[in-house]
Length: 127
Image (tube, rainbow, N blue to C red):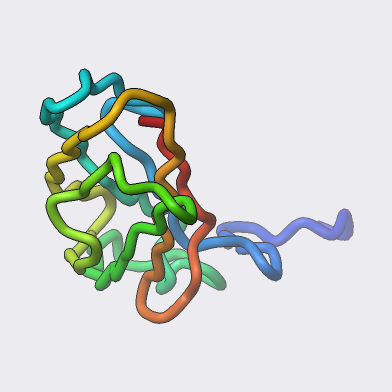
């Protein structure tokens, strides 16, 4: 080839994340004071680890995602049904959560996640 391209290979750039987090609904969630709303926390694979240097056989491998939520300091008006957890992902997966609002206002919930020990980008959801 001579042009610096590698035929038939997938390359993950150094420092790139193997997966990204998302929420459903995405970005923001409206919850009335003294009410509860559903939020799904999810992870989408970007590139399978087995495919980082070469194409795999097409089989999807399953990975473990661990997560915990960080509330802003001093915030007492928001409660998440589970403050931490783990789930398996093989491409794309979600876990359901319940958000309880005890007071009016907008509060950022920061979800910190790892996949098989690799830190994923933080996910912030405004509630």
